Length: 123
Ligand SMILES: Cc1cc2nc3c(=O)[nH]c(=O)nc-3n(C[C@H](O)[C@H](O)[C@H](O)COP(=O)(O)O)c2cc1C
Image 1 (tube, helix red, strand yellow):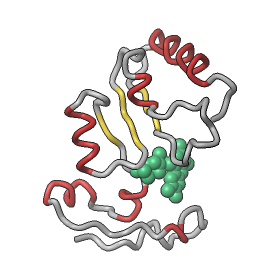
Image 2 (cartoon, protein in one colour; image 1 turned 90 degrees about the vertical axis):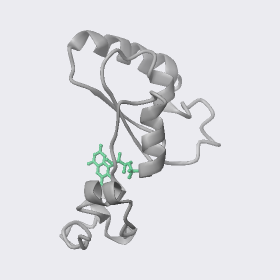
Image 3 (cartoon, protein in one colour; image 1 turned 30 degrees about the horizontal axis):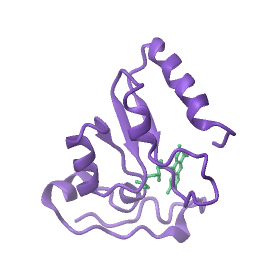
Image 4 (spheres, helix red, strand yellow; image 1 turned 90 degrees about the horizontal axis):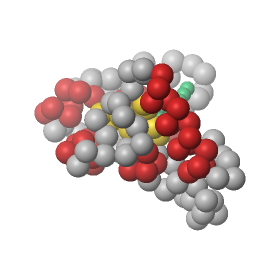
């Protein structure tokens, strides 16, 4: 979502959400180059971590390794995976075993059918 002043707007929103007794806040890092959007927040999880008082989930371009580091560093409490989970239905087992991953097939994203959603192989 864009805004002329995203840091001010979403700092206000996150502060207000603190009063709503929510289970968690889930943030997604920007998924595109921000060169032409200098006003956008570049590292949203690091930015909002000090403002949010509850459990924080982050996502966006994480690997199991970078996700683990983010949790160790306290940047987030949990890391969610999107594309890696779509292409690896047994993602938790693969992470635990440090196994190789199926590559996501971007041509099947948002394609509307079952191909690319239910036919990736398990280990
Ligand atoms: C095919 C596809 C469909 C998605 N659908 C949604 C959606 O409906 N709502 C949403 O908030 N995010 C959606 N996402 C974004 C993911 O939830 C996730 O935030 C994003 O892919 C970043 O994580 P990743 O780098 O691990 O893929 C979708 C992503 C993909 C690839």
